[in-house]
Structure formats: C-alpha cells, structure tokens
Image (spheres, rainbow, N blue to C red):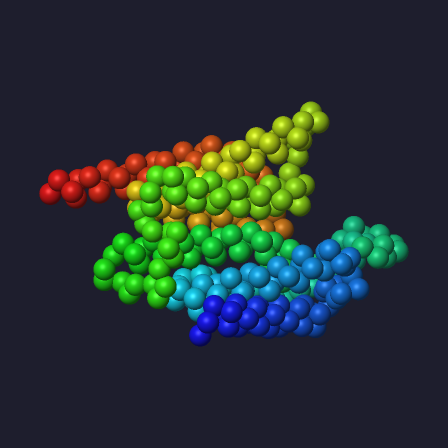
Length: 281
C-alpha cells in the first residue's frame, strides 16, 4: 500500500472515530452540533477528533507501530465507557444546586462531558500519542528481540548524529511547548500581579526544555527513561482534565516545570549509571 493510501485510510478512520464520538455526544444531549460553533471552532474541535485517531492509525499502517494505536483505543474506550455506563451524565440547573426559586437556564453537567473534553483537548492527546510512537520506534531499533519497524525513517536513525539530534529535540520541544501553552491559556492559567505575559513566556521556555531534553537523550544517547517519563507526564496531565477539579493539575505542570525536568534528569542519570555498570561487566 502506498503512502498516499496510508494517509487516506488514516483520515477515513479518523473521520469515523470523530463521527461515532459526536453521534454519542449528541445522543447524550451535549451541544456539540455544527450550529454551536464558529467555523474556526468547528474545524478545531471536529478536526481534532479526526487527527487524534488518524495519527496513530497512520503510524500503524506506515511503520507498524502499535503502541500509539493501543493508547488511542484505550483512551477512546475509556471515554465511551465513562459516558455510557452508569451513572452517566446528569443535567442540573444551577437553581437546583443553589436552591433558587426560579430556574436560571445555566446547566451543570455531572458525571459527564468526557467526549467534550476529549474533543477540546485532542491536540494534547495527539502529542502524547506521537511521543508513544517515538518511544516504540526507538525501542524496536534498539532491542533485537523485538520486530523491526517496517520502514526505517531515514532522518530518525538512533543514535542520531549530534546536529540532527539537536534538531529533532528542538522541534519536539516546540511542538510540546506550543500545545501546552495553548492548553494553559484555554484552562485560564493566570498569576496575580498582572504579569500573565511573563508567566506564559516562562512556561513556554520550561515546556520546551521539558520535552527537548529527554528527546535529545533518547535520539542521541538511547536513554529511554527520560522520554518515557515525559510521555507519562503529558498523558497524565491531559487525562486529569476529564475530572472537574478546582486544583488544576496543568497549572502545576506548567508553572513548576523545573520539578518535572529535575525528575527527568534524575531518571536519565539512573539509567545511564545502570548502563555503565552493565558495560563494565
């Protein structure tokens, strides 16, 4: 099958994925129809549901990478399971919660909105699935017991030359930073004192470092633990948004990125130490 067929097949599966989730959401009573959004909003939300599925499917068809596809299946299955199993979504007027005499027309949804949050945050999930795919690719090119990828990526030889490794890490860091800055902005992450611009600049630099460092260690030195931890951070961060929690986990991830970077460096040092011990034996 040609690369064009792989792409078209992936987009078709992505469209089916989006269509099924949207049909379920409409059946549950969520306001996710085309008339509820502007053209830009519609493209972002519907397109996000297409891309978040198309990317893992394309990686599976093109390079036989199965981990992103498994991650997609688990995530989508979780979302549908939470929506369709009891207790299911409950719609309540604020007046009922506040014991007001007249209805306000403001509706609160309890035990639901999983599909809506999945749709809105699809870009973050996509980055997480990409990191999962990169990890699988690196692991399968390292251990001979695992089957090789069907089509080795010419520009992603691991270990990569210094200059190429820096470029890959820089691009991966930019993708991570762009998505996480947008994620923070969407969630309304702020700081007192009217210095939001400085906060977002600080967070953007941190988000870039937090991804670029482990990606460099992966593609240049074949250290898998830092990139694995980064992937866990990303997926856990976006998964936490399924629950309505006043203590926003992303605010901590975005503002205290140096803690996560420190953990990445620690596990990288431990892996490097064990590898050196193994080399001396």
